[in-house]
Image (cartoon, rainbow, N blue to C red):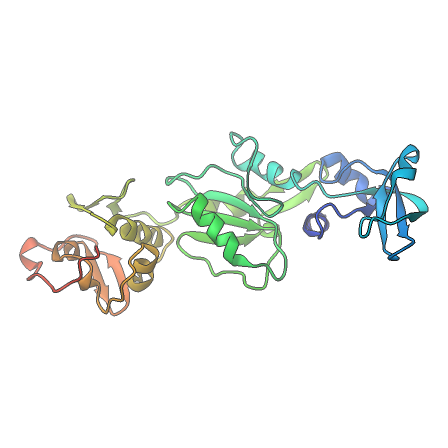
Length: 304
């Protein structure tokens, strides 16, 4: 049943009329996934020959014109039609994840919704109305503008061609992996969903918002300039179970624009008491090195 709802939800253009089948559709109308059935006739254009279904009452038939060219039409046989209610799915999911968020936040009309509150202490949840050939660039840009301070889970109505791999910050998950349909409506499977919403790996350090103080084994390192952004991203990687991360990738995402051949060009020696590097990888140590082992100052750029 869920696959049927997802198919209707993804239909283009938005608002596509579906011939009403009482036996197959009545339960979805009652659940709120489909609109109430209405009297419908095909409008066959005399000029451009387009043929489109139009919901119309008998008293308004003389007003119907071709939606394509505005020409006169000949009305065909009468039937009942419904269409998908796009607000139903995000609102139904939000009611089960975060009932305080009313209504859900629409980020891209008919495409992307935030269905739970976005805070640095929780995983923000979104619903993406996807298609096979979805352009992900504007989606990611919108997500980054809305929330770039923690983990986020993007539920997609179905997989798409350029489905991203999971990262420490963003997980794209097909809806049918964590939900199913019942006669009363859509239901989320807590056993499948909860592991995606919580940090599974205990952290051995503290880096609370605004991420400008890293505390490790009782010692605290003050972070400056872009360093908090870098460490926040590294924290997310560790919280997602990654033992290490690419420091080059973290620098780019933290806003460092220059080209670096070593992380020592960016961070002072004091920072390296708290982090360790190997080739392209970086991770937070289990305990800071003694100050006597910090070593001499390295040559580095001033873009910290």
